[in-house]
Amino acid sequence: MNADAKHSIKADIAHHVHPQSNLRQHAEKGPTMITHGKGVFIYDSEGREIIDGFSGLGCVSLGYHNERLADAAMGQMNTLPFAPTFYNRSHPRVAELGERLIGLAPGGMNRVMFQCSGSEANDTAIKLLWYTNTANGNPNRRKIIGRVRGYHGNTVATVSLSGQPHMHRKFGLPLPEFKHTELPNYYRFHIDGESEIEFSNRMAAHFEDLVLSEGPETVAAFFAEPAISGGGALMPPEGYWDAMQAVLRKYDIKFVADEVVCGFGRTGNLWGSQTWGLKPDMVSCAKALSAAFFPISALMFKDEMYADMMKNSDEVGVFGHGYTYAGHPVGAAVALEALDIYDEIDLVGHVRKVSETFLARCRALSDHPLVAEVRGVGLFCGLELMKDATKREPFDPSWKVGELVQNFAHDRGLYLRAIGDRMSFMPPLIIKEYEIEIAADRFKAALDDAWAVVRGRV
Ligand code: PMP
Image (cartoon, rainbow, N blue to C red):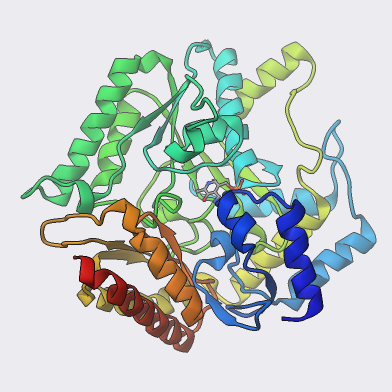
């Protein structure tokens, strides 16, 4: 490690407080310092080459080097580096991006608002639900339902909507309007003998009970990812979306599809909503919208909501919501270029093609003594680690088996994310078959390393 790298690590420990990190560990061990990247590989300050099996944070769709995206950013910075979208002002790139996104959106969307992050897109969705419900005679419809272990962001409202206890504890959250229905993890939580469809119906019945106990007339919306990423790459069980959407229709509850991770090809279709036949009223997207080269997000919705917004705006004189960097010209230029690239290289087609190798190699890991269940779609796969797969007996959480696998994988040159004892594997969407093979070999080796530690205790 050179002197510069040593200095940055020291500075990082001394001053930089890290989000979503173990602060004690950071103070004692410091960060893994990533210095550069190319393709699906990242490089750390110790010179290690690591395959990024988590696409940064599920966002680096086109890998770590792309001259076209860099040129698009530079070109825009040299032409118009900033323009507000407040006060009825606009600029050509953001108008083009809006048109382009609406052309791609899952059915029925015709309006779009821009922000800088997934959290802001979902926070905006919550505010628009509240705002429009005051215009359409339903001011008491304020409750928002998410799912246990779901994740939708980190603002006060979106983290309340998320079902992540460690993000609530000590913060005095969630806010009272936010409720959570069950996590549809079939493998972990089905009753012996229960089919996937029966399980899905039970999840929907639980959801309906929650709606009824809260009072349907007080529930504004249900937020969900088509497949859960934050709670650990969890694919919906058979029949889940049919059953859940029937409840939404029955009580006229709006459905917000969080496509922040699933959007732009992750599941083998442009949208996760297409993969599972969702009919959302609003759609949020971010991350791969700009291939993660610039922070930009979007929230899309229907004309009917826009009409309600118009009513309020007419009354108040202005629509009182928005962020300085909403529709940033550089973000818009980069996103437009990313969407062009996706088209030209047929990214979705590529995901479908390499997904066969990816899923086959992941499924082969189910023979490993640590792995109980493997389930994935596209380039998105979750692997459940269990002490006893047949009895569905989890490991003692204090053993931190997931973290052990994650750390061994890093040593072997593969970045994976452990969410408890569930491993999430979601490489950049441009990954090639031979890179998948290398990554899968490293994953298997990391499982072997972890098994060598755990075996004696089982
Ligand atoms: N929704 C989902 C499904 C996410 O995975 C994330 C981020 N991991 C967010 C929303 C929040 O996005 P951001 O971190 O850009 O605010």
